[in-house]
Length: 81
Image (cartoon, rainbow, N blue to C red; front, side, top):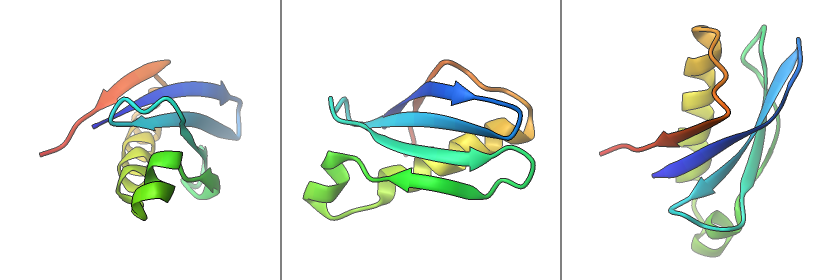
């Protein structure tokens, strides 16, 4: 699971910090609102340590799904099974 925290949203893009498994050090992802392209991303310290991108992938997927329905929550818990 991970927590998404909205950093900034403007007419062109949205940026979220994501926190894997309650980690205190976040990753960050910025996605274009009109084209759903990833503009920038930074892995969390958790992912760097464990050499994975699983949480980044889940964060990107949820942010893109939210963009499609024009929703930009300030915070969101993302869980999967």
